[in-house]
Length: 137
Image (cartoon, rainbow, N blue to C red; front, side, top):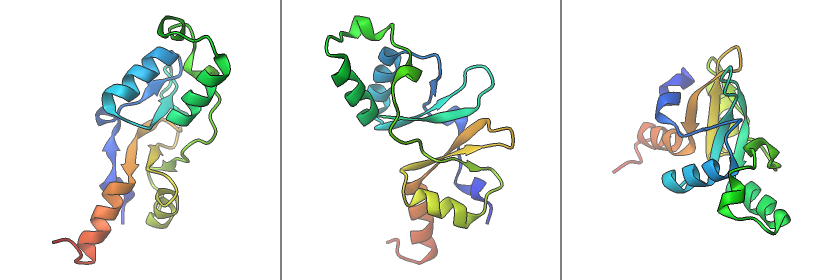
């Protein structure tokens, strides 16, 4: 099975660029109500990693005197990330996808040049498997 069947393309995904600020990140995550969001390189579109609410909270805690105005000057890449969502390549097999989606809410999908092309959500994979097993009502 081709994993691209599950793909939510980049143009339908909220993501951050590596030169976005903390304020832009907070506003985008709040607007979309995401707890984690992919970060990609603004120049070549390569997947860099994933920033989570936890990453933001711990960094803000360490900065103490942070206001929203000061957050405009903090580059998102200065935030330490605890763990990045591991990507899969577009030609990955279903077994590789399932092993990653079991541990991540979404799996970034990259092309052979490591450019971000979209995500596959755990929800979409579970929904497909539920229908395949005849468990949907």
